[in-house]
Every structure is written in structure tokens, then in C-alpha cells.
Image 1 (tube, helix red, strand yellow):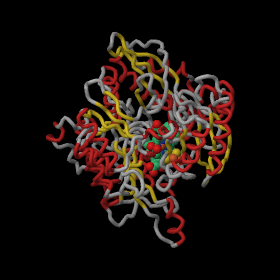
Image 2: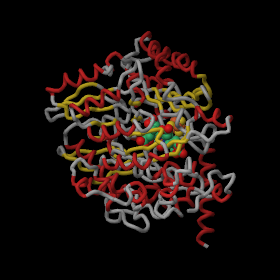
Image 3: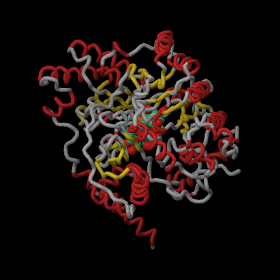
Image 4: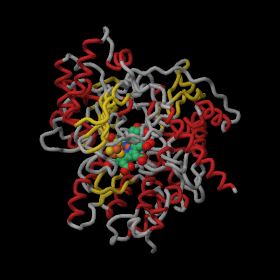
Length: 609
Ligand code: SRM
Ligand code: SF4
């Protein structure tokens, strides 16, 4: 077996291999993953395999906290793998939850709910990754395409309300998920020993149809993605007005259903949202999605394929920092982009996008009627971390007991909370008692801001983090909560979000307050987004120490309290009195983007010669 070198320093070929080359040469994303995972002598996999591994739903990581110490001692890094399960719309059965709970004992002992409604396990050792993926697949979920340059987990409205519009939205998340699954037998060959699928397991109605699709993996080039897949990751969500729980405007593609006579007639489609940026680099910046058009329900998935292939063919493949579809939309202009998508939809009529009005990105925590006589309970989970930390709510124990005894379906929400669905009213007290027994209290006593505040994972696992995030935000909110109470703002909808670096995983750029890591304990502070998720925040302070963030927040809250009009929420006060991030995009952005587009065009011309 030939293994490429472990570091670029010892293998100059690898250091030059671009992600595009690695994809191209991967033989359907196979690469040498199987051989390298079978080789116990390798403590970790080379970078090019890590690129491919992402398409299979996993990232190689090392413990950032131990890194310096191990290096000083001349030791190898503490390598492990993060594995992400995909669940369209966040839906997961009790059995699947229990399998994930069991699996996390082989990893870091915790589950991390993600803000795209997936589940991550951290700290899986190289020798155990295959077993974990195998077991996730046998649970009826999959990790295929959870990461990588493909369509990621499709988000959908979390509330399990039983009506025509919610049913159709969930159906659409599943249709999208299946249409854009990458097609190659590599996944089954590597992780399932080629088993593809057990026929009995496929018949099980609980099995996610995505897993069934693995059986149909054809050989040859991927029918949608071709040989080099997409230029970059691609994110899709469905929102039902007035809730914007999925944060529609941050997505590459968003769908909003419109009803006629109680049935879904079609969807308005938005395009070009995305949040990643680099501090100080003008050619990178967050964008909110813009309306594209409205199409009838039967054409939504085909229209999405036309959008995805437009990005596939027009996206920037020379500069990954400008490769997301938001830059393609900016480069082509929304009208040019729309015309190209329409050209790819012969015979399909598109209509002007319909107006969209959201009220909030928040989850409605607590007990609610589902509309079919049953109840659902949305339970607050601090930062999406499911663990049994001493002195804290025992989330793992509580959800385990509920999954074992109540056996209800669960939903992971885009705010990383958990919904317990389909609860018989007769079981309501039993559910409350189990939660209380494990210290998982209803969030009634919390400030409204606390209930929705979220931070990305960051240290110690994220290889890109510049500062703490998940481990820092609860402490910061502990200081902001008393300020909110003192100013009588405890029930105000104010959105706080934090990320450990400017990639924006915690979706900070449309929050009322976004704290974005730039160095250990230093954060850029963005202010002036909206709890509705429909406006960008602007950079107010370039660098604030973690301990100074509550004081800076206080200044805004005091001004809000003094200046607000009757019933005005923070977001509306800010827009009325201050400059928001909706200021025109700076000219320099377009200049740098145009330069990059010219470079791309030049390369295409050379390739065509
Ligand atoms: Fe993210 C990369 C975690 C949602 C923008 N994200 C990462 C990686 C994989 C770090 C890496 O590349 O080495 C992080 C793994 C950390 C760890 O140890 O677990 C990571 N992202 C997360 C999660 C777990 C944060 C969370 O608090 O839940 C979310 C997983 C969602 C999922 O189930 O798929 C997560 N990431 C997001 C979002 C929000 C969203 O998708 O709605 C964004 C902003 C929206 C967007 O994509 O524009 C986001 N993540 C990024 C980026 C910047 C992309 C860009 O366009 O520049 C990166 C870095 C990259 O891709 O190069 C990144
Ligand atoms: Fe890591 Fe940065 Fe994403 Fe946070 S925002 S999880 S630090 S990549």
C-alpha cells in the first residue's frame, strides 16, 4: 500500500495537492481511506485523506489544549475524530437516540447537538471510527455528506405540528436530502464492508430513506456532482412563517411555503446567504440570502438542482475563501444568477418571489399542542451539549430515560435544543418528573435572551478556533442576565451568539450581539442584527476582552431602555437609531471579487486550450 506522507514537509507533492485535485483523483471519494484506517501503525491520516473524510461525515482533530505540551515533550498530537450524523429536519427516533448515546461512551462521553439539527460525537479514536459509522448507519441515519463540498444536512422547521404545511416542509427536507446525496459505493465499501444494506433493515419504516439510497449508489461519475463535487459546502433549509428557527437568510438556499386553500401550492426560494469571513479581509464577508423566485411545489427539487449545478459550474474553484455560492451570486448579480438558473429549467415556469415576514429565530420552549391530540415539549439544552456534568443538568441521563421509557420521537432544533414529540397527554407528568429527577428544569426562570443564546463548539476540538466559545458563553451570559433583569429587559427578545473564529458557525452576524473570536479571550463585537434573522449586524468593536463584553453590552441596553418607543424591540430600536450591517457592500469587496473572477476566467481559458 502506498501512503502519502503525513506532513507536507516530508512530501512536497501533497502540500501542492489542492482540494480540487484531491477530489478529482479520489475515485468517488474513496482515496486511501480504507487502507489507512486498516493500518493500526498510523496514528492519524494524511491531510488529503482528511479532505475526503469530510464527505463521509468526519473530521480528523487533535486536542488543542494538549497540543503545546505534547509538542514540547516531542510527542505526537492527541489525534481523534469528530463524526457528524445527518438528520433532515433534526428528526431522530428514540432507538436512534439511544444508539448515539451508547456510541458516545466510546468517544468523549458527550453528544453535541449542532445548529444544523445534526449530532456530533467528538474524540472517536482512529481504530473505532469504522464501528461508530457502521452503528450510525445501522440505526437508520447516516453520516454521508454531513461535511464536505456537497449539500449538507437539510434543515427544516423543528416544531412537530401536525398540519399540511409542516408535513410538506418535512417531506421537502427529505426529498432534498436524498436528491443531493453523493453517489458512489465508496461509503458502503469503506464503512460497511461493502454490505450496502440489510434488506430487512431497509424495510423498517423507521429507517431514514437516505440509508436506502446507499444501496442505489452507481459506479462512475456522480450524476449531480460530477468528479469534483461542488466548489464548497452547500446549505439548504425550509422555514415556515412566521418562525425563522432555521435562520433562512444564512443559507445558500432557502424555501418558504405558500398555502392556497389550506394546501402548499409552492415555495419562494432564496439564494446566496452564508456567514464565513476572515478578520480584516474585505473580499470575504457574510451575506444574507436574497429572493430568487417562486415555483410550484412539483418543481421545487428540480429548481434546487438547477441552483446547485449553477454553483457547481460557476463557483470559484481557485480560491476556497471565495468559493461559497454567496460569492457566485454577487459575481453574477442576482438577476444574472436567476437567468442562468431559469435557463437550466426549460419548460418550468417561475414567478416573482412572494413577500416573507418572520417574527423570530427562537424556539418556543415548553409544552405545546401538536394539533393531533398529542403534545410536544421543547427542552432547553445549554449550548447543545448533552452530558452528565457534575452539578449541572444531567441531560444524557434524562433523555436516555425518556427514550427508554416514553419511546417518543425526538427533534434536534436549529437552536440546539431537544423537542420530545408525540407525547400522550397522559404521559406529560411522567416526562416532567423524569426531567426534574435529572435536574433538567423548564427554562421558565431564564431570561429570554439566555434561552436562545448559542455558541459554536470551538476549543478544545475545533482546529480553526482562535478563542473559547461554547465553554465561554454560559459564563458571559451569567453576567449579562443580571444586567437584563436590573434594566427590566429579562423578557425582551435579544439574540446573543458567539463563535471562536470568524467562520461564523454560531451564526453571529445576524444576531443583535455577535461575539467573534480573534485571539485567546479577545472578541470582535458585532451589534445590530435582528432576532428575526433578517438583518446583518455591523462591527462595533474590533477587539474586546471576554470579561469586558458584558460591560459593552450594558451600554447598548441602557441606551435601548432610555430611547425605545412603546413596544419597540431591541432590533427595531437599533435600526431606528444606529447604523446596522446593512450598509452598502464596500466597493473594495467588488473590486477584489472581480479580480478573482478574472483569474478564474483566465484559468478556464487556459484549460480549454
Ligand atoms: Fe461550522 C467549520 C462546527 C455550523 C461555517 N464548523 C467547522 C468545523 C468543522 C471546523 C473545521 O473545519 O475544522 C467545526 C467543527 C468543530 C467541532 O470541533 O465540532 C464546525 N459548524 C460547526 C457546528 C457544530 C457549530 C455548532 O455550534 O453547532 C455546526 C455544525 C452544523 C452541522 O450539523 O452541519 C456548524 N458552520 C455552521 C454554520 C451555521 C449553519 O450552517 O447554519 C456556519 C455559518 C453558515 C455558513 O456556512 O456560511 C458555519 N464552519 C463554517 C465555516 C465557514 C464557511 C465559509 O463559508 O467560509 C467553516 C470553515 C470552512 O468551511 O472552511 C466551518
Ligand atoms: Fe470552529 Fe470557528 Fe466554527 Fe467555532 S466558528 S466551530 S471556532 S470553525
